[in-house]
Amino acid sequence: MTEQLAQEIFRTASESIDVLSPPVDGAITQARTMRRKRRRVVTASIVAAIVVVAGVTWATTRPADVKPPEPGPANVVSSPNPAAIAWYAGGKLHLDRIAVELPPLTDLVEVYGGAVYGDREGVVAYVAADGTRTVIGAKVAAAPLVGSDESGWAAWVDPRGGTPTLVVYDVVAGKVLDRLELPSTGAGSPDLDVATHPVAIDQDHVYYATRDGDFAWAPLDEEPLLLDRQGLLDSASATRVYEQSGRIDIVQSFFSVDFVRRGEGATLSGGGNYVLTRAPGAWTPGAPFRPLLYDARSGDRLESGVGADELVLDASFGEEHDVVYVVGRTADLGADATDPMLTLRSCQLGTADCHDVALLPAAGERPLLAH
Image (tube, rainbow, N blue to C red; front, side, top):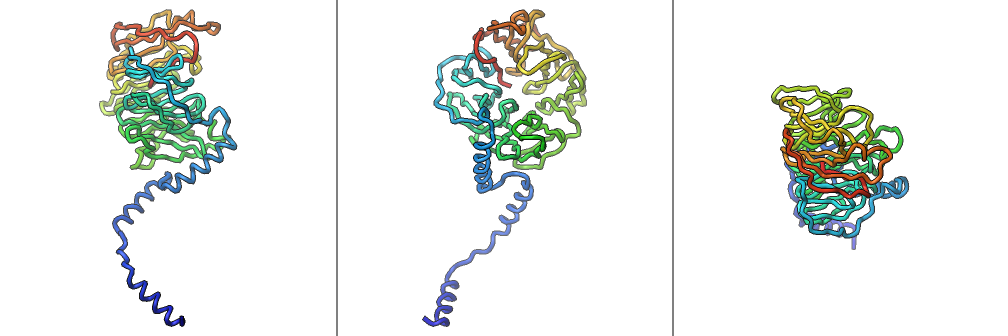
């Protein structure tokens, strides 16, 4: 075959191939999306690369107590829940109608009829209303996770791969909604820096804290926005509560309402109308405390439902007008106490109408309420 004949054959073949016009609109849209998400993991290939790198880093540098193993099938039994909230005690997670046997937990949030939990091994998993368990991520055991029943999201910081990454998981869709790479502090291993953590999910925004300040982020839509005020403790229905030197500041900006009250740490009810905090004083996570309750609309202090001779190990809002406690007698919760008698108590907010709904196992892991 001569060179001239070969060129003629290739020319004829190329003319027979239809070439479509470039998808200009699609390319522009894609470019805008890529630009808007320049700090995120936005393609499957990048995600895959990060998973591979994270896996190698995890296996070679992460402590064994953080590595999340794949769990075996969970033992599920029928067990109607006496409280209007998910809770964990005695090795069992109690949902609406079932109880699921699980290892010791460190975090628990109620989402979409089930619960997302973190355990001592750093596993983040979702337990559906029927007891089906799915591992959805990993975090540092001591770092918090947050959830929203309204949006069906859960969020946590994944330390793997050398760069802390804020992960937002959509429980309804059963997949990661978005990821955001966060700045590393440079102060040691990122898996030990729990200063970078999610604070709340409210109105399709994830609020999170870093050493550089507090931010609000709308997944799939916006770049993070630095808040004009730091020390955010919680946000619900646009009501926010901030830490303020042994006090809390309750802010309803929509109604121009602002109350500074006694307390440390805070949780808002789902509708943002009530605030649950603890009395100021020396305290370590997991230790008993005295709860304080406030009406976020008026600033009024409310009856807690906890007696003068009692303390609580955990407290959370159930339905909008209920608060739930893990209660014990002060005398039984001292440093030398062993196997104290604990009670699950439900109280109607603003009244003394309280009911002890269950006795909790005296031995075993520390009980947890969903937040």
